[in-house]
Image: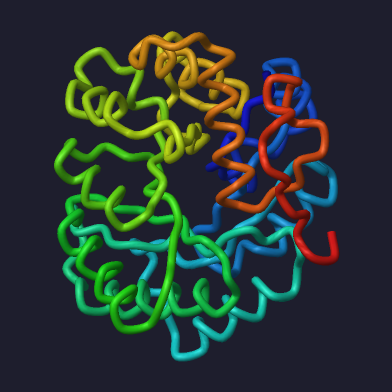
Length: 280
């Protein structure tokens, strides 16, 4: 059963020397599509160049909350223009709030709101980074939905409590788990992973970070390792691996409006059709 890695950073220097070899590895592991997140708009051309080489790679564009030094009066317009310029863009992000180290909460909220506005206008989901900011993140999304309109997306690399998880499920968001869910002492994350409904569950690597067990000694994570995230979730949720793969793949296709193509096995033949991004 094919897998979708919904969060990668392949443009980082650590992948520069052997990207073709890594692509062969993830294809052998069953990874049929990947979503490349964006830390800041300046890296978007490099992401496009990689997608030119890798047809199963889809793109997002946005500004990470820890990169607020790059948020300029023109940044929102730049993100919107880039998102509209390439049919491979399937999301805005990563955006969100990170209060772990930062002391610029007001600016983070402003940038987050503006990126939600772009996503709403383009009918795209958002990829949300959230660290030590679950309540504030939920409040921003709830207020946006109340005053502006519908917005959905994914809480990426989720490590929140079950209570926090429910906040975002109630807001209509998907929850994506990374290698953290495989860690022995990640009890809170495992509890959250067990409660997420089937139709909101996603998987990712967030590579090159957070290599999962049993690959934690390999400091550089890679898309092929999303297999281990899926295997851990199938065990936690007590479902067959193929069922877990089918669930998460269908959810990725649905949220990001990826082309159905040949990703789904015959088990998924009765799933509703998913549109191909316009112009792709």
